[in-house]
Length: 199
Image 1 (cartoon, helix red, strand yellow):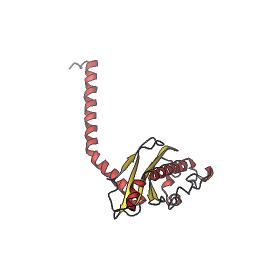
Image 2 (image 1 turned 60 degrees about the horizontal axis):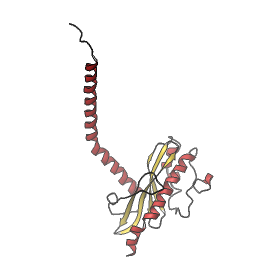
Image 3 (image 1 turned 90 degrees about the vertical axis):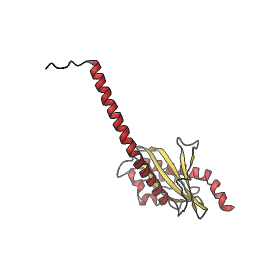
Image 4 (image 1 turned 120 degrees about the vertical axis):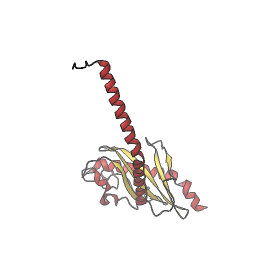
């Protein structure tokens, strides 16, 4: 049997068929994983809200407010928290691109009076064993119950009050920058909810 002569047209058609098959396969896999991915992302957000906020009974996720401050490259999410109709605080996303490995994204929960209730790390790519310690209790403890209007959210080395992670000063600077951004947005936006408490 004579071997079929390979032509440019045959190669192009084969490549086209392979590309189409791969494209359809990837599209199909993406479609069937979209819902589980969305559910996982939502669950992560709900867990973070429960961690960073005082007790609340509203659906904070559906009441999210998205703002784009001039000082930030990206939008910031604010999740207002209410208990029996009273505003008790808000969770605000903050981020910094100045981490050792880039983006550090956190969610900071604030009480009505502007104190930090808690912080949850949403995204980071810092060095394991160094920068990743920003998720640790020892590091996060120094932020809780602090009022950023009186507590200087800078590393001690830079004249602030935050103890840097050992060997990860750059990561700590990014974390404090993200926290300060979240606080600034909280202060700018909180009046729209707090005013309801006074009525």
